[in-house]
Image (cartoon, rainbow, N blue to C red; front, side):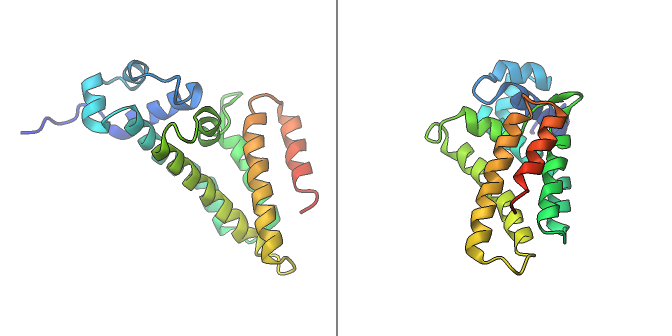
Length: 187
């Protein structure tokens, strides 16, 4: 008979996500996960197979958390203004108290090499493309833009969002708001 888990899986994944978000994937060890999650190594391996499995579950949980602002963008009828609001909402989402942690996905992409873990990189790219697709959808609300311009602007906005994620760890709120404002001047 299988043993019943003595922990809430969502709670331990939430804790693991926070650890990965603060420290990065590479710098987070199974021992650190064990301490942060409050479960032993055997339970980690039994439930998630390995560190990669914990991280993939953390990314799934991260997606559920960011879905609040993604859904707002998905439902937006404001075109570029809706995307600009997403940028502001993202900054608020990425805060932990007064600390901006950036984006878990962006932080991880910056940290790992594409060929070091293909499964993780595939998940991260899939996540980024979901956001980009929402940008395309919102940009298409402007009938005066052709598809070529929309695709280029979506790429530009993704690049800007990735940069904003990194900048949020360095610059103050006023500077970040200025960055958002300038990003949208020519759209």
